[in-house]
Image (cartoon, rainbow over all chains, first blue to last red; front, side):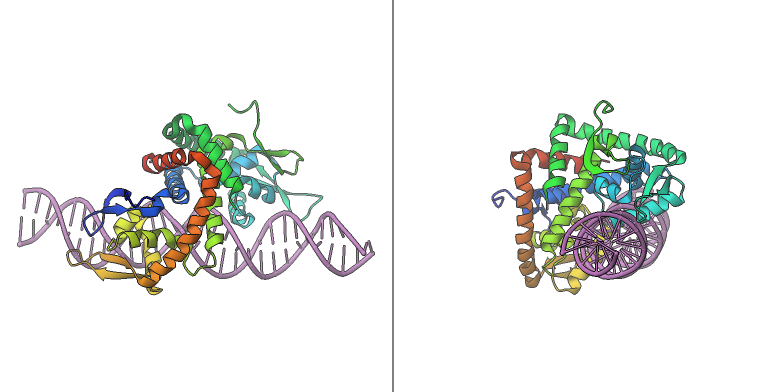
Length: 159
Length: 159
DNA sequence: GAAAGATTGTTTGATACCAAACTAGTTTGA
DNA sequence: TCAAACTAGTTTGGTATCAAACAATCTTTC
């Protein structure tokens, strides 16, 4: 147990002492959230200038690399629920970054393609994304492979 | 570059082939999001039964371990923006899990305490949280220390 | 001791996300 | 062949999160 050496951060509370993180400090889930949040916020700030929303990056990138992909497949590839994609795709189509085409053999679905405009903006955003991830690479140093492996395993195996 | 061996997942797109993740697959940020999302969803499902919302766990835990903590300090300790806390604390107080007391020397702020009720529910939720994190521990195995270290560094150093 | 600046908490307006229920098509199996 | 089961996408309702702008209150500085 960690009762012997209570873990603290440097912020202070009103009783004058430091903050006790307690059990929380041993929780992978807690630190996963902190890291992801910090990383996402940073990414958002870095890409705030462009007219492509940060949330669009992964989607547009996947559409570009997989022309004709359907929303359902995109949902699985991007790890987001299909219902999350609906409004995002609507806006990306409205703004002319993505086009949809009907699929003959399945009239429920449709195929997605990046427009030239979309590809251009993606390149823009990709520069910022690469910069951001380079920063992450610096932080993790030579442990990147292990980290990616662990993150992939968590995403795949947690239920 | 990863052009030599395009990385794929087992889902299929309409053109018949597998999904190409492309550059995305090398991005720490992307996998961080996937892992965090999967983990959070799982935690949410596991704690869905209790009448304490999953988002309350870290906060209540911190309040319990740091009696008299203020919202601002709580914000820093939990890694959430102060404006995120406002409605959460309001609800936790309304539901009787947390109490607030005025602070004499600073009338802008207030001190937070877990009620006995709150402590009891926290114990409940902590059981589920521990179970969930045990699952994460299993997945990462003996690399837990490195993982926590990397996540802490990311949270601390990214800007 | 008062004006200027900093900090605390709240409000408001966005984005991101999920899950359940629904609609409209497609597939299966008796 | 056609009803039942399944699947794709949308809608609706809920949580979580930030950032900017604001009011109230402290703190600093001259």
